[in-house]
Image (cartoon, rainbow over all chains, first blue to last red; front, side, top):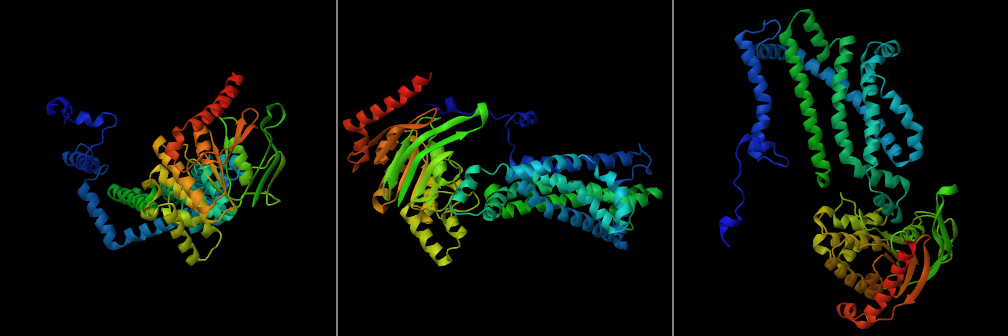
Length: 274
Length: 255
């Protein structure tokens, strides 16, 4: 048997081979592509701004945005805004999670509870959270409460339904095994159903917290003293597009950090599932 | 311990959709016995096991353990399923300990019993491994250990080796038989595999499908000191052929 007869076909090294189905690029190639994903738009932006195709009033240069970012950071507004917005997001989202997880688990496990709740939730889900803003202001005023309530309303239904779906993937055998080992309902729900679904629940939260970020900006546009969304609105009034860009980038970076935080949490708590 | 299944029937559905899955099943077994139920798919053999486990209720008839009717699942009737039998987030030792923890047994005793059952099952080296790191045969051994650790009076096995390769299946059969011979377990095994039933059980009930009913019961009095020898012996092969024949006849009668 000669080696050449069984040699693997020569590896194609052109870029197109990356798009053949089932191809898995090496670590280095993947890392490079990920860097390019951010670097290419940044360079394009810099080039367009530098060449002066667009009025600087409409498209500030990366340098101008960076200067605006540092000056906001130095004056302390930036951190005040970040603190205010993240506080609202975490407040509303935490509330929505604390309620949604047990409700979703019960709906997933007990068909009767599911039948009782699902039609209502399915309908409420289609009422845009932003449409509740006037009501929330009438009921709760213009302080922190309506903003937190908006984020709560905008995420709880999705959290419930996605937790419910996750729970339905718990193998029936696992629940029944627990019963034959002497497990009581509560033990089954907490120690088996919730534990088995934990990876999917964390993933659900990771996806849905993005909605909270959208909503916090909407809430702050309506009525707020501080916050990233509020700052954007003020910047519009003074035609400070550089500030708007800076705030948008901060919003993106915080969201990205939260996403990574959830991924890390998943890896730390559910080694068996990743 | 005496497990009695007395005139048990089970229907699913209502009205015209009503289907009789089990029709007046009766048998009993005593402590230390190894009984197998053999049947093809549709014979309701898993349903019988679920009724005994208390996971479903019979439509009529009576199931009792030592005269006490079965009302729901409990650790006196340990069960092992064919698939998804382990908690994937727990290592082998914690899987074995899980049932004991549910019952609030003292930590020191749990540790001791877990170590004992891991050793009996030949799983000492697997103690800290997650289920996904174990082979299919090892997983089923952990599942059996976990069921035994809560000290059940009968072990219910629902095609426990059905998903394993032939060779591993045979070695698991040898292992289970040894375990039974050494520890005096009481085992009720469900299988579609005539050979498995004959190799392992002292008594075999053959189930006919649609509706599921016992059509033949036999005591197996083969010499089980050497299973490899047994699997090739004429007496065993004749018995196997005869049982497989009656199962096949039922199948063709349906077509």
